Image (cartoon, rainbow, N blue to C red; front, side, top):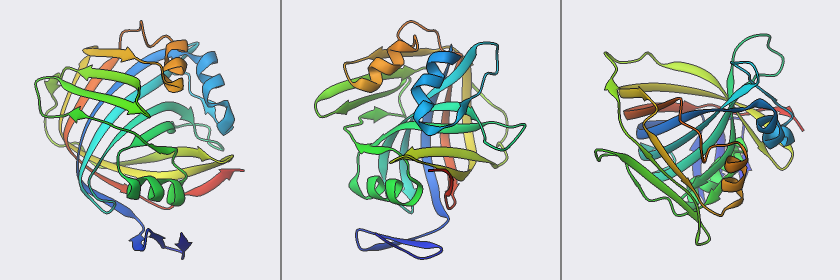
Length: 236
């Protein structure tokens, strides 16, 4: 991988920043989890877990089908936690703890450009059925299976918003400006079914109580545009 100020060469192809996703579909679930164990899970990043309620943190599970974007089409699953952005008294960010994908190009790009913890996995998903479903299998081991029931359609089109995503790879934590513009959003309390397997990440989620917790919410987005800008190092 070679780099200039605004471009990266991945597998012989030039990727210019910012990277744009023109069409993606997403389903996600949010869970309240104990803040102490959640801090232990992300402690390697040097970031501080957010506590929107006393003693509670927020863990998010999301699966994404990228249909049109600068890194090509692929499937992705994310385990993320709400964190306090370092150096700021207010605001929230999303720390990406685990990010399996099913294509080699986006795996190398994600790790090289932003330090996202991408790894190769089999990620079958259905984002068009009555129930949105996804499974993640790594090396023949099932990490998890999740199903989300779409809720009530939110009126109008949400305005684009930018927030900080954080990654940590090889001991380096980075901040990534991430802009999202969703359309066709459905949301509801609960409505999430989760089955955990025998992968190490499943053991972490089980330790946070996700195998018995009721989701705070389930959200489905029919069409999502995203922009990922250059990463900056916040800890090494």
